[in-house]
Image (cartoon, rainbow, N blue to C red; front, side, top):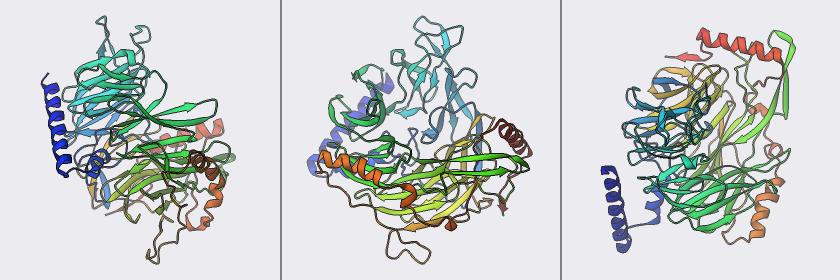
Length: 574
């Protein structure tokens, strides 16, 4: 009751203060947007930073030039989609969700002390309506922290099956300090993700009271929650008949439908601010094109669209593996664009070109590269103009994270991982730090209090949560061929001229013209043709995708050997 009273008090004070500011002319849309746009300096309260999933924070990140591990913890399979989700941080505590590797319908939430890494509590058990103690349903994504509570959606069964030990599904609210269950909605077992803000917990089909779990409003339609910002809840749905996706915007307080936008091709990810929804998407077909665009939060009209070319050296690459001359590995081109990150001026998206494999690859020498290419793009938030792009031969993973001045992203380099820090305004590389021992999956970074937090899933091993801090001595990554390309007149001798994106579209553009903008124009640009830069400007790298049992077994043994030998493929600088 004390927590509920405190929340209601804060909401009342906030409402009165906001009314006074607006009445006196002291309030502004910009200040409201800033609240929606950035996580606070000492927190990363949702897996993507904010309820709008902007992946932006006011916190200062580590300054480099290298990173070292402050602490780490092993955990079974990390929950959620590591291409967009990160560890959650609030009030000096780091939270993570994991799935049992033995029974995938079970899981738990763990709270770690941010400074020391000490485990503060772990929630693994729940009670059914009949009073039976059963495992918690496997979290389907990373948790959300709001007003001293932790919320998450768990998969499993409404009631436990004792034979299979299925976890108890539904939406959970835990006390952030102790991990005790405050309430549980087992009848919402199909929920895939939640967000929490302004005293409400949002899920795929509605909103709940954050204190009690009671429904505020619900709709009877399928879809997936993709963000809440500016008192608007956005949901994504898919029409299988037309093979297209659409966005539905609803009033976050009442659930009233504001607008629906379709078709939008295949939606990769979104980021919502107080007045705009930013989307990354791809067209369907054998030669898809990729784009980033902005939808008006008011009516869903297309404000601008910019293509996101994804470059690769060829559709496929085949080469002979090490000493096994009879075995060949084929690498498929697998273009990918990340979910967007958004700050006050720019939209950032990260791309890579080739399929990611599970293993570092058999018999690869220190001098060999993986066949890969990645680029981080920065677009003007207002016009969609491409401001700069940073190209690198690493295999970029996950989505970028942006602070006031720096953009961070991670990827695989040779047989290790690398974390980049770029100037957010210019795209200039500040530093790149190596992390020994290459992973299978590596998450987007979370930033808080000059530290960087990540999930790393290693081959044949459990997942890990890491806290990194800056150091003056560490692992050097020789990213030969990396460069920044800027769209300005005084970029300097080391910059390459860049053609601007298509002109931005007015919000008054007709629905027919907007459909053409999202389909015909997207299909007009082939990604291979739109980047006619010579591959000689970047180191050609080589990656592996397993195509034969022999290659798989050989790679398995060699990968296990690499993990056990503890040899870093990087050069150590002191």
